[in-house]
Length: 113
Length: 109
Image 1 (cartoon, each protein chain N blue to C red):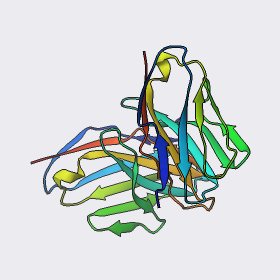
Image 2 (cartoon, rainbow over the protein chains, first blue to last red):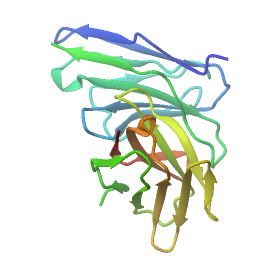
Image 3 (cartoon, chains in turn red, blue):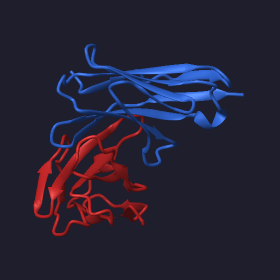
């Protein structure tokens, strides 16, 4: 049981490039989330999804897009990378019942130069 | 006002000490509460859920005070391996999770 899998683990982008951060979970969780974490800061929610075909903005969605075509996958896309998007990105999932903790992927460290 | 607030520390304690962290939350309707541990910007890992009656897991004790809207984590007999950042997490309705900025703990030999 792999849990939540994120790829890539590290990436360096040039300003203006685009890329997709992949996230997959094999626990049949309906809810999935994308967070970013800047140095010395807590996790900030970028986007989340309550099920296939349904996504919604979090606290810091600007510059990102998501899709949820299947229960398992929740990719995060950066269209025009900017230095302010240098961060560590975490994907998480949870069962839709309350009182259940989130499961996190290992994270993707992204640098925009 | 932030949804979740924590004292960032750092807390530097000797091995064997007892240390306590507090966390306050702003939404009185918050449903679930958790403490996560995070090492060197690796992924957060669940340390323990926090139940209304309080709960204990080995050297770790979590308490919830709904009236005052805070949760606490007590670590007894601190080990070097306890050095990490401890994140307070609150779940509101609709599976919305809010994270504190974390409290840094360093256990000193």
